[in-house]
Length: 346
Image (cartoon, rainbow, N blue to C red):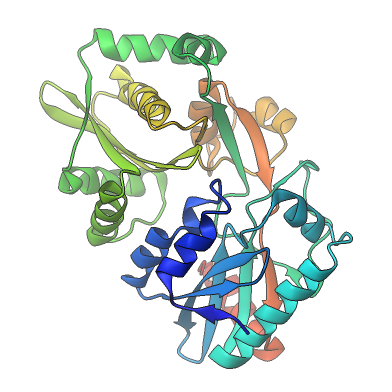
């Protein structure tokens, strides 16, 4: 058994995998510790995992490996297909099993950072795991290639998106880096109520901004018009990848298209940080043909998000999703019943 709470050792391990996901980074673990999670690091020769642990329902503990484990893409692809991953598959299963015994974990949710090319879903899962009934991170997203020059990025966008970026500039919308988390949070409250999603407490955004800003991996952009905020965006850059995690806008002056200019400025920032892809982070989980067929009619769920994000000219990709290792079938059944009745996501 080889797990610890050693962040320095974890960061040294991650040096072997410069393109590992931000959610497996040490700073992300340090951030989540401030909001009720215990964080452990599990090591083996050719893979590792940052594991988040917390109590649930007051009767058991669950563990979560977001965008992990960390290993070569070849090993991970074979693992999720239940292919001949040999020692790797055995090691993952045995290490997670031992971790659950020592830490009294009812089950472990794993969401690998692996794209799947069967875009219609997942029929396989790693040996010893079960397909989860829900994922925490988005299953499907849009990836924008930004390793080329600015004009090529613009040329790939939909004509209407390019027009809206220029319109916002012509109409006097200004986008600048900011430290004003309070204004951003007030806009998040408006956006959450309008679009029917839950919003974290303000300190959540304050702390994630502080930690990753200090690392040079985060920027908050605010769009203003006549010195009044209209919209905000928090972007992260880690390795070659940038992520759009949090965004908000007010109901006023929607005609000025401030979110389009915000995204463009965030893309330019990500390029300056050396990123080659920009992840727009979350669209409805349907194949691209169905998305294109339906997006003009649908208004529910993430369909409005897809209408906006598709304009930036990226590629629709799907991730493997969530798998659960079940250490306690009884407690896992209670958890499944609870989440089914309440819709609560862990």
